[in-house]
Length: 327
Ligand code: UDP
Picture 1 (tube, rainbow, N blue to C red):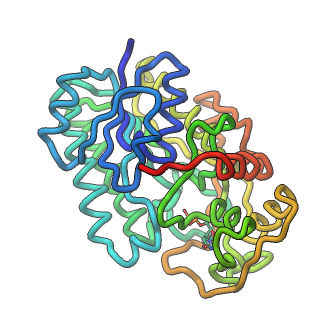
Picture 2: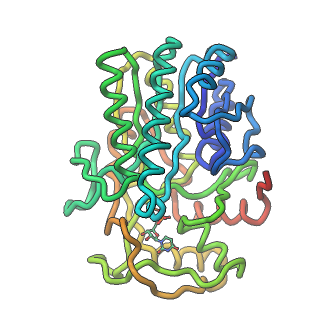
């Protein structure tokens, strides 16, 4: 069976990617240090407990499994934390990715799919961000991801590493079969927090700022279902395997939802109020991040099918009712 090394395969998006890869005929080998991931989420292939900054551990993984490609999700990804402890982001995300890219090149494994972010774009006046929008990240999370994009470009020119870079917008939802889902401690992302607040599993949600230049004053984001997102990764892997060369793709739907839109949608799906209060802006937040996602549709043939907001909330809610990780 063809193998692929999946870093961060024990995390939210990585675990969904492993399921999609398994369904596409790959054996996903998860490499994860379990700092934010869960061993129970590794259900679709072997697991290696390792840190990306440990070159020896990576070399052993490449030697033992001989993967034909790498899918790199492992990263710290919280904007708030990145503002307070940028050193964690530069060290973990950049040094880890650099070590991984070097190990992959040295092992002769040259197809590399990387999870980047719309946070690399930063604040822009234009409504829709496409792949050519200049990147001016506002926080160390976006900065560290942009740095890894630069590393991959340089490794492409110097060492023949071929990459597909996906710049994610906001990922939400869960596997409809609830085999895997989103589970963070602490939870910081809007959709799971809204669900937990509605279920009374936490206090009122704090809306981070209502004085943004948007119709209702709250930040606008472009939400994409995790299953649609990982389907794009399988298409991106095929793109590389077909020899089509390095390429960057945004992954979003092109529709913007404010924080209040998400709260209202959740109230509709769940049939109960989402207790919330108005708070201060969160440092590092952009006003509006909405994708120009034409390229992924046109070139990869990507068709997001579950990224309707009510579907995403329904799938996330189902997972929250049935699935939890403990280790
Ligand atoms: N948000 C909020 N309250 C929260 C968490 C998030 O108002 O408790 C807002 C946040 O300011 C942003 C949006 O929800 O505008 C999405 O935030 P999230 O952390 O889910 O993703 P990000 O956009 O930071 O990647």
